Amino acid sequence: MSEMQTLRSKQFVKFQNFTASSLLALFFISLITTNKASAHLREYQVSFENSSWQLTKQTRLECELSHNIPRYGVAQFVAEASKQLNMAFNLDMLRLPNRYDTATLYSKPPKWMPGAISRRISDMRILKQYDGDLPDAPAWEMLVELEKGFQPTIFYQDWHNPNDQVAVGLSAGNFVEAYNKFSVCIDNLLPFSFEDIAYTVLTYKVDKAELTQYSKSRLEMIGEYLKEDIDLELVLIAGHTDTFGEEWPNEQLSLRRANEVRDYFASMGVDLQRIEVAGFGEKRNISPNESPIDRAKNRRVVIRMQK
Image (cartoon, rainbow, N blue to C red; front, side, top):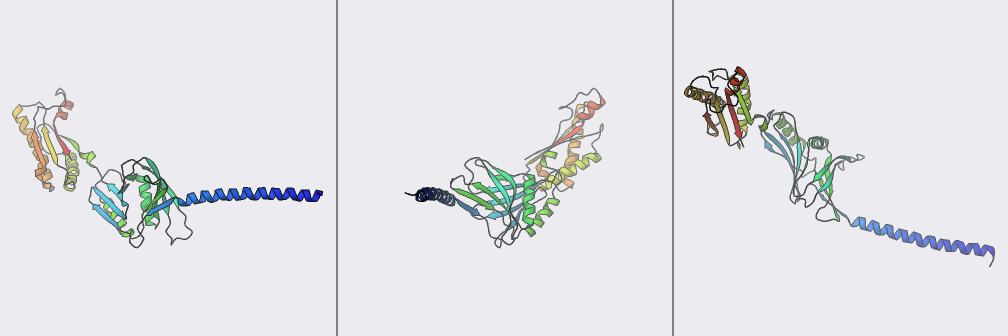
């Protein structure tokens, strides 16, 4: 065999080996691609035209904006009465998670925004047997994205089927009008929460039952809350005095102080059946009566509210 024939024979063998390796590689790529293709993405999202946003709670204590997701559950944005503006997102799921995991929230552009790209907003913890939720900052960002026409979408691995991915999308259809009403509701929320007023102590001058300006301001807050929170079961108003004077007159003075507070609530339109009044006089002092400062602490009305 000539040298040229030997060279060609070696090249042919290399070509055969290369072809076999390439075919084998292509086979594995095809196999991997097939396996990836078998992973199914289940999408839950209502169409833009059929999207519905509802203001499901509208009081001075709470505002709730809800969006139904067919076959999945309800997405809810909630703001509550508080000293500070607040927002939370809750994903009320028909089928709760059976394990702990992490989902990822993206803002996806709709089809009618060619060239726009998806943007990651936040991660969302998935807790076993709990609905999904997000705190203040990402919840506000979701609302802004919806207002712009984007679709906040949550992606996670299905906890019931390891071969499936799940995408839960919020549609921007019919959002703006409901969002405007939601914003008005938020603007009208009380600037304090139940925790801010659940326990209140009013102090008094010696032998006086009249309310101070501070007391009236505080009672205005409590009264406004009482008119809004119909689930609040009981308001206890307890009057107290220091040990100056006789025991019986002190008990009557403490009762007058408590009744003065009750009457103030009545003048605001609060139902008196929800209020209990008691006068304890000097029986339940919280401080020694040895100095003017200590005695002033004992001259008080305590207002307790119970859910």
